[in-house]
Amino acid sequence: MVYIGKFHTDKPIIDLHVHVGPEFIPRRYSIKSLADEAQSEAFGFVAKNHFQATTSWAAMINMEYNIPIIGSITLNKSVGGINHEAIRGALSGLKTNILAENNKLSKRRFIVWMPTIHAEAHLDQYNRKDILAEWGSSSKDQKIYPKGEGLTILEKNNLKYLSPETVKVLELIAKEDLILATGHLSAKEVELLVIEALNIGVKKIIITHPLFQATNMPIKKQIELSKLDGVFIELCYVNLSMDNLSIDLYVKVIEAIGPKNVILTTDLGQSFNESIIEGWRSYYNLLEKKGISKDNFLQMAVENPYIILE
Image 1: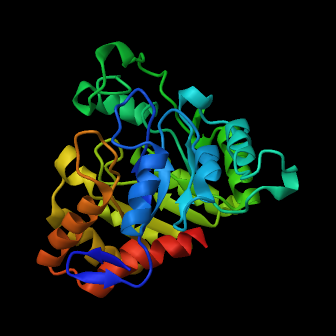
Image 2 (image 1 turned 30 degrees about the vertical axis):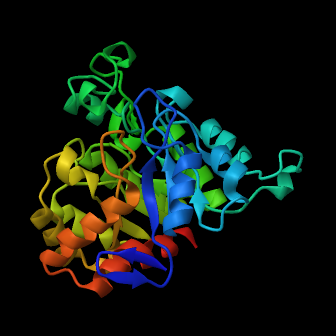
């Protein structure tokens, strides 16, 4: 039982977007310290890292805990960008027993994020810098990429089509029944990606915080995409403070799309922000004050993540 706001949940929240270190960006948690907090407070999580896959980290500690601990990979430059071999590597990390044969791999789904800090849209948003001083990063760890050197899912010579490697990535996600998250791509990229991913056979898609300025997807387009089978719109708690988004805008999205196609996550893990459980309590209280019911909150924070992971 998890105490959030003024009520207990019957099954644990699974936060599908939590940052863990080590990485260049200072983090509040390692996967072990996050798992300790999650065990104590009875919530599950997906561990995200902008530079490394976390599937093996999750696999190595999963047996020590009785809450869901799920890995992921983000297709940034540090893993070779948008490439199916990086996902294959993340799949190999699903072993809980390093001596096990390949057929002993865990079948638990994990999230494949499209590029975040190395997406062309992200670099455009942040003056071509991949990581920022305001995130606590040292200037020596930042890298500046010239225009056009950011990652994109689009074919170089025809921006109406996905690149061949992006197609291979989607084919592997579909084959292994993984979860696709859209990362920090532009709104136009996200729209094309979602449509093509569904055509290829991807079953579960999270449109990553589409109100975030690098994506900046109109609500009308969010509504349209959310009606497609297996597509969910993500609203992250931390974007409210770090990206100056309003809770009223979040409520507008929830009311326009409906709770069955929205997921709530914290996107926490920053060294200067509150803990995950504190974030969830604040998030619930903010939404409750704006008229979001307990049942709708539970649909977005508990039921929908289970649907995505099942």
